Image 1 (cartoon, rainbow, N blue to C red):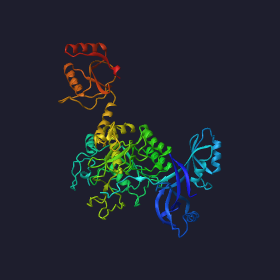
Image 2: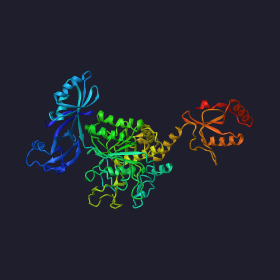
Image 3: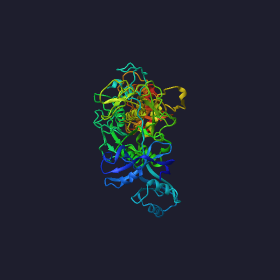
Image 4: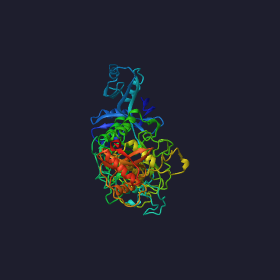
Length: 619
């Protein structure tokens, strides 16, 4: 079975075996086994993907020999889809959809024929099964099932390597150098010109919040390579989880995986007096280590975030290969988190659009429930590597001109330039052992995740849908006006994210959602100093309504005037009229209607017209 055609997600894959790679599950570390030549991937579908010391044998014969070893639990072939260079491995699970009307006893006959074990019933006609020791290869089983009349669809669960959307060129303490937070047009340690204002307005948002965000907000970053000892991350970690070893002990020190550390730092690096600071420095950090294309792993990573209190889920990875479009179960896993997380308000899920320069975004970023993040540069231009498409929500600062500084894992080997002089810094100038230059949509995505954390700090009642809406509505239009059609650009989405405007709108919605007996923050044209007492007012009694105002400054003016003239308090009722916030002002809170009528007569004699109002009618 060197070639095989199977269904996977929305694609039909023509597969052929790898001539060099196999997957093994061993009782010890796979990379330390005598029969292993090189460990290529530590975890793919639960297998270690390795090359074998064949010593002249074929890979098939050597794998059969290895399978008989006591230290080997199981071995599997690795495949490639036609036209793709991504290795694929079957996890052993198959998702079967039966034709309508096929009963459970009839379904059981199909499972018995192939010695399959039922692992989950997802619907009357949809089940998940796992191959057993008596079953054929799971790909072969899936292909055979597809030819049975009772089976509508049989999809083997496959895992493959997903893209990490980091800056692939040479990567380059440092608040003054974090131009993406506030761009003055100058960098302290370089003469390189950047564009003033080409930033996410994060410092302005901090000023508006009068702080660095709430410690109650939890930002989950799903990725690989988290340095839990890094000074900017170590004191912030909350409920970590590693999917590859199924424990809270994260895998560290593997030179192949260091991407998660800079991604996390951009979003939530602590304000501790040294190094860099994240967009939401006070937020908790939930590292979820171990990306995977497999259905079960995808479900587990998002379910874990929801079950353990994540408010925001940042993902700087994905796939643009047409063979790996998301199937129903993966789409549902993301949708479930985005719609049911946060006790029904929805987790805010963000995905990078990808770094290939394509005219379409990653299949993960294309999910309708996520915030798809593209990249802009320090010149406020489109980063040429950043994928484009109608699903782009917003863009955010990253490299493409001058890179972003972020945290570096202690084992990160760095990237050398052609001359060998580059390591962690674009210009070769060191800025501390814990940091490096970083970029790509991998950087822009956690930046927006941090902005979302500031928004939820301002208004924790926002739904995930509202967060996305606010981000899009408050973004700054950059680039040429011709880039936008009906307010949206394929390159920039709805524009470059503006943290200050987003936080301001989050605060405004919080104020407008307060009970009507509370008084909102002062806005509008009222001038001078006012002493204004704020007290709860029960919806009972009588007063005199003098008007409805759209400008809160007028409310202050009238309240001060009425108290001075008639010695009565002003009661403010807040509502919406014609799409705008309106303030009804009633003078007095009297026990009976006759007292209110007497007040109305007194006010009329003083030149103030009004009518008697039952406060109960304003509840």
